[in-house]
Length: 87
Image: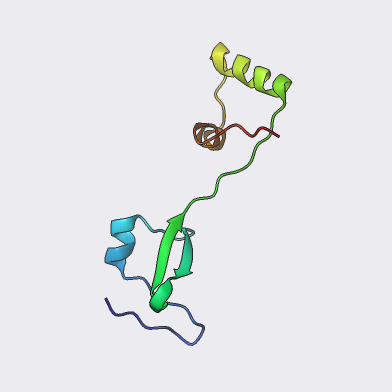
């Protein structure tokens, strides 16, 4: 697929590509140049970093288990992607 670079160095990804890969305004793309000069764009996602100590984790678990309130959607998304940071 042929694309043209404008005077600012930007390219316009065709609508069919954006639709097929779910690329919307604000989507972050990683650009890499491979051996031989091939250029690749990879969609990437960033997640907020939240650090809680044991007390904070316990309070969060109690709030969730009580089902008396709803955690914010952004927090639920972050929590579903969370891992454990040993530090």
